[in-house]
Image (tube, rainbow, N blue to C red; front, top):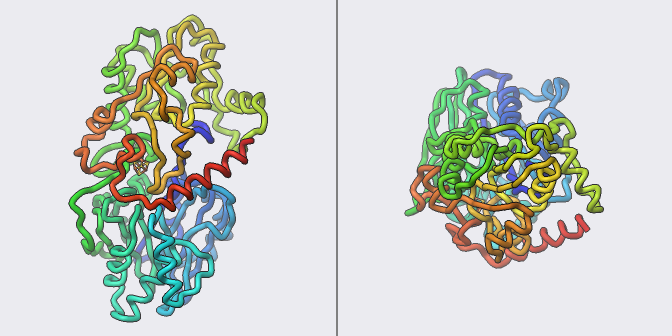
Length: 476
Ligand code: SF4
């Protein structure tokens, strides 16, 4: 939906190995464009060579790479990355990071958060490592390099890395022309592999395989490392946990509806969630209106189950691009109307059900409810395809702190009144789990239950608070 009132995904990753001497960069380009929804802040590629060639910058994939830039990149193997940074966008934050180590250059693209990163960095500094940028990826490269010094075995070095890192990570890595895809032992963020006509790809979401016309070979398993070659995919199961923890929010909001994650098509999950929400929270109404575009798949399911027509009563302006947060209330209201405008002729006099996938702070939804009422709706009911978000995500998704969640410490009546709606209904936790169709124990539901699959160090809580304070200043 609209910026500022939605959680933001932080990254998409890609790795390519092909036997065509010049095509890896083109494959990276198209697959990164297919993953653009996972990060619009920066884009980058690192391609094999005597020295790894890396081009990255702030902007969309199509801003960073044009035909002239692409001519500078040639190779059979490479990795790519799209990034969403929480703030203070700087070109140096763009990934992949290419790190010079004692065993040569290692390029890494990372989606996720390492919750014990500070501890790892402290340990590496004690061992004498000097951090140039202080990134998590630099720490990863030094851990790999240290193990390589001992064993000269890259797979063993990756295993040591995985044993030491706590958190969520899908990584693509380029080392001496070899391409690896690495998924954390809980499988929190998605990663899958596919076979192209002249090679193999590992990508955050299957839509990036579709664009490469690659045959999907399945998800990289939690704790698994895959090495891609033009001719095959070698699998190494490095760590096995007694549970998985796939992020349920990938299904509800982040992933593209045409992606397939763990064998579940995201669109179908959303449709089922909408249908379940209609069963759990029936309402007498005339029409169902999706919040464009995030609520559309849920709204189809809701409208079908409730036997109500779905209409496009809110029109989204797709061409205004990125905006910044306006300082005054009046401008903020204009900014919402600039992006989503109600169609008076189809709304006037109707009892409307507004359907969206999630609500974080609720500010945008409140303005939309008021705009729909202003367009003459008799009643406005809000239905949400995920359970109330009550605690932050510490595992790779940018959300606000607990205090600023709409649903934090509020009753449903309070939420309804805050939104100025006539009624509110969120799908239950069990409802969304059923819609996804995976066992509850295979999902991370941390932000809706407060129970995370792994311990979150207290310094992570402080970090999230700092970010939120910064945002507060930003908006004041
Ligand atoms: S806490 Fe929520 S957003 Fe974060 S990984 Fe878990 S389910 Fe996903």
